[in-house]
Image (cartoon, rainbow, N blue to C red; front, top):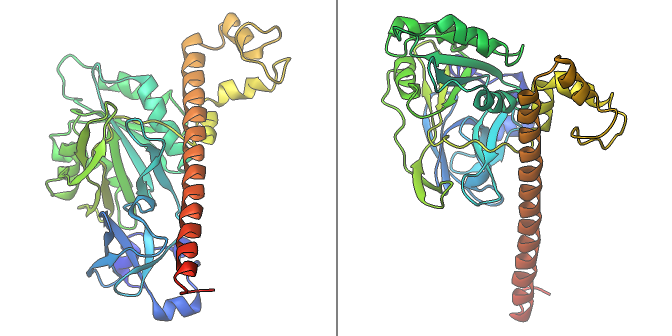
Length: 348
C-alpha cells in the first residue's frame, strides 16, 4: 500500500479483511464525505473518488472515516470498522445516526468557565470508551484572567482514569499545537462538544481550513430542520480530522459497556447487593446505598449513572424495535414485488 494511504489510516486491521481476489479487482478508498446517494473518498494515489451507492449500501449506513472497497464507479463493500461513534438521531426519530468511523482520538471540547459540566463530559467519555477511542478533554479559554486552568484539568482527570486533559487558548496556534501529539500521520481525530467553546477555531488551526460548512438536513430536538455536514480534513501534523457539526444533542445508545467502565466504582458494587434485581433505592442490603451513606460514594454520581444507564437502555430498545419494523417492511416489500412479477409472468 502507498505511504499516503498508510498516513490516511490504512492498517493491517483493514488489509486483513481483503481477499486476494478483491486485492486484484477492487481498490480501497477512505470515505471523506457522505452524500444522499453517493460517497466521496480518497484512494491510495490520493485521487478524489466519487462512488455511487447501490444494492444494500445506503447513505445512512455509511460514516465519514469508513474504509470501503470500490470497483472504480461504485462502492462494493464496507470494511469492518476499528471504531465507530454514533448517537440516537436528534428529535423524535428512533434511529441510530453514524457520526464518524475509525477514530483514534475523540477530542471533547469544553471551556474553563461555566460550560464545564461533569455530567455532560461523562456522556462524551462514555461514548468514547464504548467506541474504543482515546478520550481527550480539551478546555479552551485558558487565558481567561480570573480562571484557574489547572483546577479544570484536575476536575477533568477525575472523570475517568482513561481520560487525558489539557487547557489551552484556542486562538493561540502555539497553544493548540499541544494537541499535535494525537494528530500525527496515520491518526484520525474528531472534535465534539458544546457550541461556542472554540471547536471551529481549533479545527481551523489544526487544518488551516475554514470548517463547519454544512449541506445535509436533519431534524433537531424540536422537530425543526437544521443543517449539518461531516467531512474529513488533513491536519498540519499529518493526521486527519473529522469535522462533526450538529452535535448539540448527544443521546447515547448501545453504550452499556462504556457507561459501566466509566462508572466502574459503582458497577463493581452492584454484585455485592443482597438482591440481584436491586433498584438501589430503598431495598435492604444495597451495597450502593451503603457506600453513599458511609460517604465513600457521592449520591449525585449515582444519580448520573442511573440517568445514563436508563437513557441508554431506552434508546437501545427503541432503535432495536425500529430496526425490526424496518426489516419486516423490507421483507413485505420484497414479497409484494415478487408477487407482482409472478402475475406478470416474469418469473415462475
